[in-house]
Image (cartoon, rainbow, N blue to C red):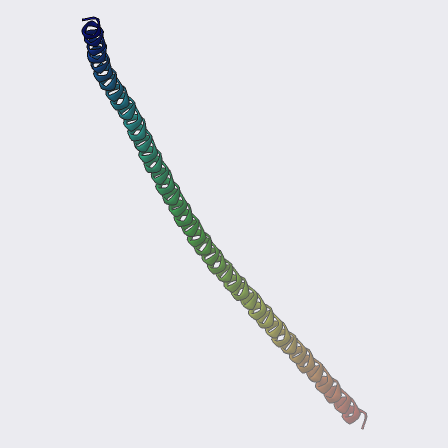
Length: 152
């Protein structure tokens, strides 16, 4: 009898331990699942943040590329404008040079003409003078001849 009671107790204990163990295992499982879920959530959050970061970096990179492209385009435009300006200035300078050349040529030609005219006029004047001198000489000669004739 004593033995059976002891057996009963043992059995009860065994049952209790079994129950406890079951409960414990259940709790363990639950905790494990909780942990796993937490880990997964953390993992997912990390993934999401990483994805966001990558997207942001991509966006920044794209923006930078666009900016660089715009800068390059602007530089090209500026270069074109500079070249155009240079060409225009060159054209202007050439025009100015041509005008100056023309002016100088005109001045030269006018000077030449003036010189020619002066020479012509001088020639005319000398010719007139010479003519007059000739006339006077002739007159003198004639007068001399007349005087000679009178003397005779």
